[in-house]
Length: 165
Length: 419
Image 1 (tube, each protein chain N blue to C red):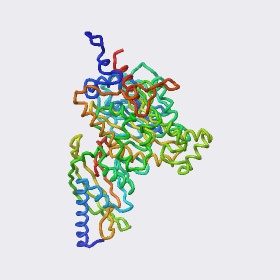
Image 2: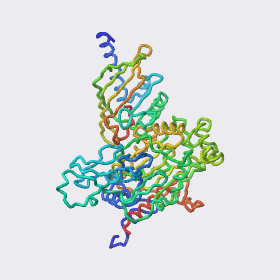
Image 3: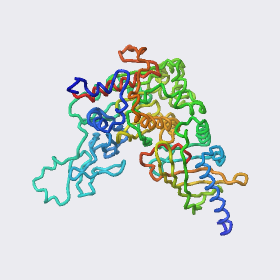
Image 4: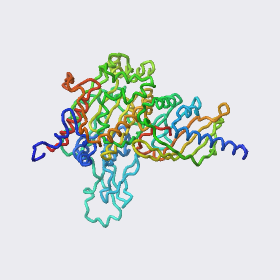
């Protein structure tokens, strides 16, 4: 159990990390965003609910670390037409919480809500999600070991989601 | 028929090498398509493996209509319309489940999962009423082919086998990828919405001209063998099976490689369990042929696209509103292959897929593009001079030629023109 003071320090570091991640995503700073991941990072956007088994059921995104790198490399080509031109994005991150149940391995379980406004060639689209993270200190810096993005409408037909969510 | 000219409007809009842009954007044409195509011809609805047990159900669609596919207590598959026969309320609000009956929440009418009305609340008000007259609506005809369930709202017309015609053989080829000869649809669907007419999707599925350009970003960074299949030097073919069914036949390229499982970018050594089961099931020679040829790339008109490793179901909701339902193909008795199929499918398709995000971008840009009315036409003449008949009499062309689009529009015109 963390003391109140160290908990507040940790929350402040976590909040800064999540805001930074949001800004890098909004501003399409793909490589800087990729550097936020640990070497074993997993980026998961389930479909059809929050609790599906991604090893058995289709997810919108279920990237291991090498597939995260591939996703970034595709975005970097400038010929990923769905992001050429890039979507204009701004997102709000809120309800940041340290989870009551923390993993035994020292990772930090954190959750937040996000509301993302996307303006693309198609139209303006509003996305809303619950984000569940496992953060880890690596060489004194926070990194993402996993990020699970549970879109509120992930059971419905959704438009192309080609920016970093 | 235009009384003044004697020329049907469809003949004016659909020419041998070009079609009119309004076919994709005119709301009246979309309404006519619902009537003449979606609510008449055979439309793929679901797969028997999605309702494996008695009383299983899954909610599907035919165009904008919600259809409940059930397996009743006798084991029979039914296609019921999700509309209470009383006041029209939807009787089923969950995507799947197991239920002997559906009770409408509005006035508590209850229907068995074969569609029969079995009861209503306060029945004394319905004295003398014949319940048999108040069953759930059904898709008029239902037939299945190797587990793929199709429905047609036309009381008469071709059988499913007649409709599939030469394309039935592609489904035969598909199921042979399983050592037990069966496809299973068990991995759940991604639902990818596009603001575009459904025919842009339909025509793109067997368009072998676009991959080198639309997918250049992923071919450039992934170690993908796909790009070469669609190059100028490729020996792969486009094929028109008639009845609107079209194919990209990649077997000539895979046979040149002559390496089993190369079609899926892998090898026998990496799938030892699968390879052993295939050889046990089909014998060494036939198993080797199946594993060299791979699965088909075929668009069954109007809505079932089998894309080697995954299956898409196209659903039109409005003239510029369509949904692609997509899932990994799974083959009975092939768990090691199936795991890879799911992984590859998740990477490549759906709203965030490396391939489909760009395809879908093209659909939406095409739709906005054709709102400009000059030139009026979509030009589909590529390969018209070099197309030929294959040994079975089907028209084939180079993999980058527009044989499939021309085949689709020929059939489309037949369906849309009044008999």
